[in-house]
Length: 336
Image 1 (tube, helix red, strand yellow):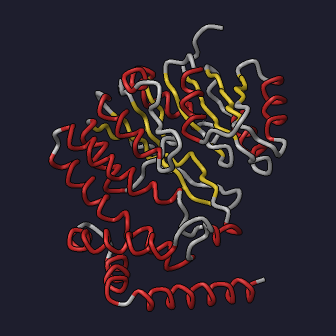
Image 2 (cartoon, helix red, strand yellow):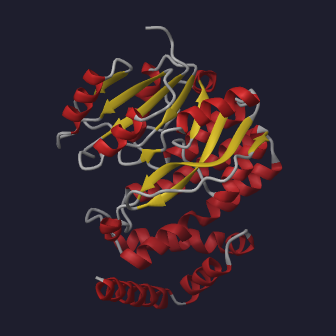
């Protein structure tokens, strides 16, 4: 097989209910010079069989198998190692993409001679149509791209296409194995080596939000990886020597404990193995240490109000979230 222009890595783990929609969107791609690497990470729900059937139908698709679950980062790393394309992109197996997504990404990258191309995405809970505006493409330096990523807090890899050489420079474990929040760390390793990043305003990625599982958004041990990931971003930003990027990374790191405390205030602790009292105490200590920087950062007024309440009356925040969720459930019940 000659090397395709684009390799697409799709990690799969027990997403059998959503995987057919994802695979169908890959089948509809208008861009033909591609390969798809499906990395089954030890699925037990029939997802593996769906992957095998897809690969049997399409000579440009292959399946990698993990006997045991190793996590999203390991699946992506192994998928990248198996690719042979000039560019590498990603799709999560519960999401779906527009038919022209990889055609757009490849065209934008090649026409602008960029090492990274990026499109826009929307969050949705079901099929959705979008009206794309006339295309506008911006080009950014690596520093500008990192600064924009931090300011907008859009860390995903699945709406970007990367030149293979960026992964070659990154090494075999671009995604930190065993950790969540892996996208932000990976992008901080990949983007600095890009000579140019091209950004299209086209909306072509559909990120699935399972509204029915919103109660699972509480505090757990894996969520605590956010603090480590944000601190690692600060270290990587400091090594770049960009004062602008470093300030934004430090601002983001100052939000880590605040973000986790908001999850705790709204949903509580959902991990029975997590020591709630000790964990919340440590988070409040870190939150207090970073409070001044947090309030001076480009945070919305609403979030600053929540931060003020968390500092001075955390029980009020928990009550307000409880009241909000109750009213929301009543509203949904009334609409049904």
